[in-house]
Image (cartoon, rainbow, N blue to C red; front, side, top):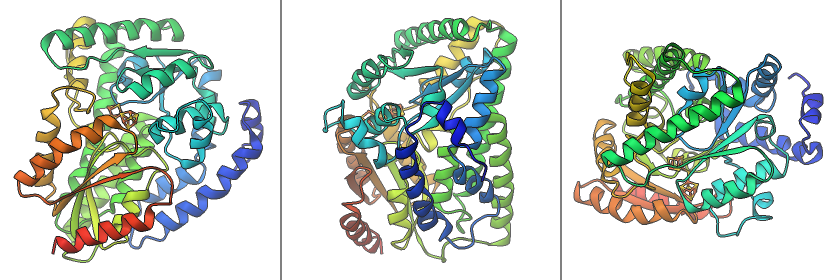
Length: 423
Ligand code: BJ8
């Protein structure tokens, strides 16, 4: 492993505390990931990325900045990567998924805030994540109240642009969202010093569409009767996709999909025949939040799909290509992104339809509706989701949790009972 201490020092990181984080991550990864048997060989790429997660990609981003590129840090799958890439910028995801960052977040936020927000704020203020130090600009959005207020705090420490996301999906909301994307494009052009043209935007649209298609291929393979990849490994692929170079991400996902398709043809599975198939739905699982997948997959079941923003909501749906003008392209981008079904919208019946459709496509035996503590949106929507699943005859278990380990045993007991109940 290369030595990145100088780089972290130059980024103004708290090295002592960062050492504490670096001490726990390899142990957690070893326990959760490297203990799995018969993993696809293609996962070696993601193992390598995680082994140097605060080194390789941050060093690439810094090199790009030296060459004049700007880095935009995002927290939500509604922020259109295409716009940044069309202006020669780079996007990196910034959602925090570790309990390690929560106390630094709680220093400025109410304890009753969702762990994703606390960890994201804590990762910046605690100076223990290079990605949070590198980003030239953060891009927030008006999805939930906790995030909206967190942007005001983060905005005192780092340049911040907030995108105003509509809360409904009527024609006038799509028009408004199109305008909001255009405003964002103007900001991006100002920061990067590069003009977005119809050609550069078309190229960016194609690039991100390719990345989505590659991720979709990996997910497609999970529909097979003999499951060629664990849910944990598929989740890792999605989590890293938020940080990686999109062309490399597409290439590695396609390579993995090739291997998985071969495994299906050869009848290779990472789970014994008859293993119960679980779909997760709910709040996103930012890296390194592998808690629920690990509990489920060490309790005798397999996770075959995630209807989350670190799952299908991230890659389903393409931006229509081949539009002639920038105006048409921005409208096409707005339409694709408004197809994502986040609980911040009302009504949000599209999400319920997606869940039922995915449950059938992935032939799941049961669904676990997971909610991050204090996420009022997904918690409340859980009522509708769980009622629809019951009506469709699909067993469902609702769970609320956070990033801490304290409830792991209790969760395991409930999940084991649920799996047993599936017969
Ligand atoms: S599109 S799910 S990534 S907002 S931060 S809403 S968990 S209380 S992350 Fe999200 Fe975009 Fe929607 Fe997806 Fe709840 Fe926490 Fe808010 Fe959260």
